[in-house]
Each structure stands twice: as structure tokens, then as C-alpha cells.
Image (cartoon, rainbow, N blue to C red):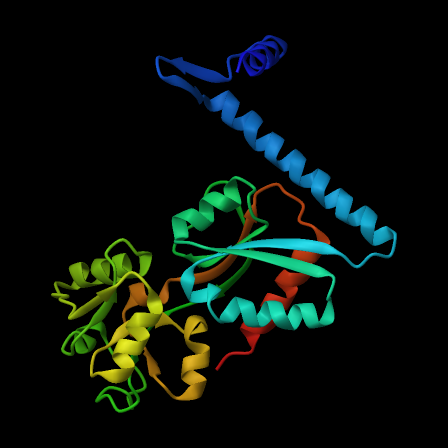
Length: 270
């Protein structure tokens, strides 16, 4: 600790500014410290990228792509696309972390991952959007459900049936609650889960309805286990699938190539 303290003090003298707020129980970065930390993260990530570029010059088809994704993309969509990508580029290795949307955003901002794959309603500070694609919320139900043959439905029509909903902390649940509040609708689920696939399994076996984007459901839709119909409500059509990276960072070639592969995968819709 004393050696670290001396280095911090030396750096503050050289920059002629304080980088930390000193408190009784420790230190926290101030605004200047946050700027310097963000620069240091980008510099270290650039070193990693240059090292991979040097390996490529030597003819070694190697690289690593670190991904963080929310549950809907981490289970089927991304693993399938990663496997396809590696079939063409076997020297590229991947690591994937699954988390909720705020955690994915944090990992991208802190440079812990190269790419964040999630859904977003608004722009985020410190994050560059590498790929953006509409991801409207759909009403998901069993093929034999009374609404299954409709071309679309309103949230009010859906709420006339039993609901299976994500936990209140999820961004999707918050979006549903906001839309219900705006329209004066009462939303009372009969089944709640903090994971997506228990909800999907539940509605496949009952007359309940849940909500999700198409990308996370492709395997289930193709298998005919469930069906999904669009919603007319404005809020349900304002979500977007995003591939995010740290703003100001130059991505490694492997990550850039995988983004192009993702773009092609999104174009192959049900």
C-alpha cells in the first residue's frame, strides 16, 4: 500500500491535480481520476490489439473475443453464431459472460470485454454502438392459444389472458409496467421468473402469455414449441438490439470480424 501511495502522489504532482477524494474509510476517484483511468484502460486495450496484429503479421491466425451478453442472447443466439464463426476461423477463441443489462454495460465501459450484446432503449455515455437492429417486444404464447392466429395484438388484449412475466428488476418488465401505467392497465402475473426460459416453458404448457424479442426465441419458434405475434403499442416497438464497445477504442480485427458475422446473422430472420 505504501508503494502504491507514493506512485499516486508522484502522479498527482506531475499532473498538478488531485486524482482521488481522500476519505476516512479510503479513497475514491474524482472526475480527473476517472478521466485518467478511462485513458489507461483504452491504452492497455490498444496494447492487446497491437499484440494480436503482430501475431497476424507472422501468419498466426489467432485472436480472442471477449463478449458479455444478456440472457436472451447468451443461451442460443450467440453460441450458435460463435460456432459458425469459428468454423471459418478456428484460431479465434471466445469467452462469454452472461449478465443483466446494467452489468453488460459496466463490463464494456471498464474494458473487461470487447463487445456487449444487449437491448437498449436509450443511448449510453462512454459506449459506442457498433451494430444496432430493431428488437420489438412480441407477445409469446403456445401455438394453440386463442391469440396465436392474430397478425398482431394490443397490450390491452394480451392482459385479458394470464401473464407470465420477468422479475420487476428486468428492463423488459419495466417496459411492460411503464406501458401499462401509461394506458391505465392492470398487470397481474400468475407466474414470475428472473430467467427467460422458465417463462417460455411455462407459456408453452399453459394459456398464459409472456413477452420477449424474436432473436432470443428463434430456436423455439422454428421448433413450433411457441408462437409470437407483434404488439401495436408504441413502447413495445422502441427497443433495439445493440452490439456495444468502449467509446474511443479501436477493436481487434477478430472482434471487428465477429461484428460483421453478427450483422449477417441478424439478417437471417425467422
